[in-house]
Image 1 (tube, helix red, strand yellow):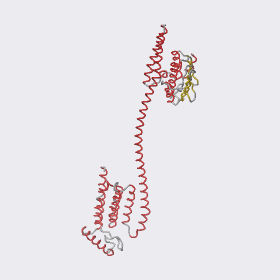
Image 2 (image 1 turned 30 degrees about the horizontal axis):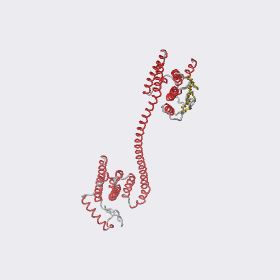
Image 3 (image 1 turned 45 degrees about the vertical axis):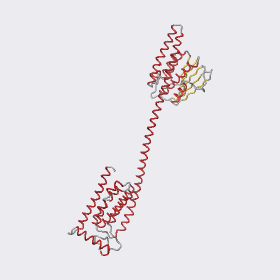
Image 4 (image 1 turned 120 degrees about the horizontal axis):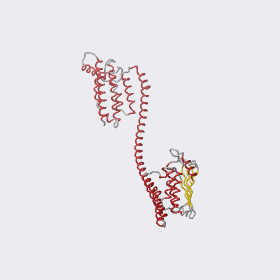
Length: 443
């Protein structure tokens, strides 16, 4: 029981006793006369007892019986009924906190209380004030679906207690035309209220379940993010640092075999350049930045520079071509294709033993195509590969919604084709076409 319930039960009990006391005082003054209240009470009790033995002996003006015809219920005088009502009010403080667990007992107590109030109002009109206590008690004690019924019953009892012998038709009209519709409306409204309350409870349970599910999903997303980051780092290291280290080793070996100082110096210079580039790429991979060539140029220019550098280092002729109208695309798209081209050319340098290589970048309305072809040794694409390169390229391309196809045959070279969506960049760059045109003119 909450502190609010503890205060309310005494408030309702005090209100009921206050209304009963006010009605009793008003009834005492309405009796009038110079006799004491005790003498009037004795006379009322005597008249009531006489009326029980012979109802016809008491006239309509006596305070005890109601009417004088045979078969009419004879009520005790109001002081006796007031004492009974006062005793009957006492359990309200005990019933109020138990109104949910003991609904049947509460309803029965309320009905008896209303009947007592009606009997008091029938013996003396002043007790209509006390009968009005049924309104707040209906709200305080009765179940939600019976509140309107309790209010209506209180009103009907108050009207019926004051109705004369000729008012039966009017009373029936009130009951049929007003009381019954009010009870039905109250029942319907309470039923809808219960439905909404149950719906709110189910929604709260669903929200709690969704919150728990959301927490689990966040935990899974965090774990997936950790795995993706590990995979990204592995791909970055393979695409940049590992390739530069392989090329660096090749340059150092070539410098060791060189007999001329100029040749040895050239190989050592290339090795120093590869070492510096690998260090820069390692730092950028840790910081999750774009490849260094794409920081200052768009994809076509960055691929052309990489192709020139790769051809000079590897000694393999490379033909680079751009078709279509270059447009600024999403950084993820450009980074993916740059890494795919970088990995494919690294594989050509390490495994293909090719003499010629071609790199083509094609812009279309919906797709961006990248093709790398060589006339090297080739391989069987159906055999599982030991390295990370081919799988890394596939995962990168699939990560942006693209496709990667590899065609190769031992002794007949290799062709790699990547197709990715042409997702536009946030801000268009109009200088790409001019840059490519000026490059061709200078070439």
